[in-house]
Amino acid sequence: MNTTMRARWYVYAYCLYLLVPLYWLVNMSLRTRGDITAGLEVVPLNPTLGNFAEIFTNPVWFTALGNSLSYVVINTIISILVAVPAAYVFSRYRFLGDRQLFFWLLTNRMAPPAVFLLPFFQLYSAIGLFDTPLAVALAHCLFTVPLAVWILEGFISNVPVEIDEMARIDGHSFVFFFFRLFLPMIRGGIGVTVFFCFMFSWVELLLARTLTGSAAKPIAVVMTRTISASGIDWGVLAAAGVLTVLPGLVVVWFVRRHLVKGFAMGRV
Amino acid sequence: MQANTNKAWLGVLPVVLLVAFSAVIPLMTVVNYSVQDIFDVQTRVFVGFDWYRETLRDPRFVDALLRQILFSSLILVIEIPLGIVLARGLPREGRLLPLLLVLLAVPLLIPWNVVGMIWQIFARPDIGLLGAAVNAAGFDYNFTGVVTDAWVTLIAMDVWHWTSLVTLLTFAGLTAIPGACYQAAMLDDASRWQVFWYVEFPRIRSVLVIAVLLRLMDSLMIYTEPFVLTGGGPGNATTFLSQYLTSMAVGQFDVGPAAAFSVLYFLVILLLCWLFYTSVMGSSKGPDPYDEDGL
Image (tube, rainbow over all chains, first blue to last red; front, side):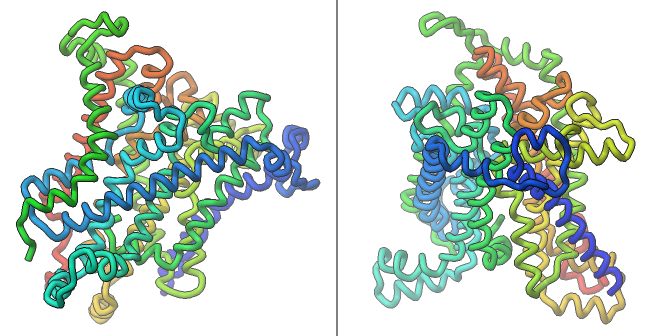
């Protein structure tokens, strides 16, 4: 049991390593610009919410947050809609070129976004989608769709194929079976997939930055532009950082019970 | 068991169309550019493999590639064992577990430029806790000026950012192992190392393959975090492939060379992932989980 306790202490030590930079971010967000440059304060002596107030009184931040959330939501919806039927088919049927197609889908997950910068820019400009959340959502499908198909295929393969056959013998139509019986059965898997699509679309910046101009700027980009406009205001920057950490925290709190089960059942 | 029908293609059609739009068209555009010299829309010359030859001879490309491989190797060597150790240290149940899992998942959900920003304000010698503490301890530490400091900071940041993914995956694999296996090992008086090697490792092997593959491909694409933290410096010491490519494609408008670079870059990632996957899957290393004599 001694070694078990030692392993537990490694975990606590690592959690401390995770927390200290986050603590420093919060610490900085509670201090003024002059206060930060004046010297190091391990605990803020004059904590202030002024940095947050500055963000909340500036409409640019709200629109940017709305932009970010809209492309993340659109991306998640598109990914789920196309990935569910594909994952079902990959799990249940053999057809011409199925293995090759599956592996080809996965290779898209290996494509570096930097490779797609230029062609994406031209493609979405040509069809008039440049600077819209839809363009970013479609571009992010590059890595969220293969991932969604991969995860869902794992979940669907865990549902016994006898269920499909029983529904057919009972005389249910395929549409009834699929929407009323099958989808509720894999809702845990869909939840996990939503989590991963949300996660990878929310944290990506390179494509989001390239495919948006002034109208659809995501929140992470507004952050970097605010810096260059007025010199570096570390306090406001840290406050914005705290605010971008929060949505992730909320999402992970809601899925905490399913997180490990999802990881274990699916492929990811 | 599995019905064989080509009607099933209807189910994958939406995915194929979407991926064709968002991946095949752009990729073909890149391949098309990589074999032409483009002056303007009307004037373009077919140049064959010239851009590829030029890219492979470009010392900056070769340096960036070597740095990239060094970086990916280092973070794999650190993150995979550390992730396994942490996953084995996590409690299997109890009130503390959800809290630890949420904490572990937090770095995964922070936008990548914010990750860079967090480490920048944490490591700067003037305003950062880490930078100030290390300097106060007597080490001369400055990640924007010294190459080794920049690398150490980058790797510390990547470990902070991504080890949780390995831990969560491994933990999921560990929880799926039936308790009877552990009891059998206990009866046989197996050491902790033997439990890991004979009981746990064979059963989490597939999940570890996924963890290594994800970390390998994602570390090969790293862009935003070093861009924010070090800007590729000092000099070019932390300029990896994506960053060099982006500066070529956006900064200088060298469409042809950038396209050839892109194709080579994508091929390098595919090759490395394929090499890893086939070498692991081809030789079944580690003991057979159902080998009764293994213990």
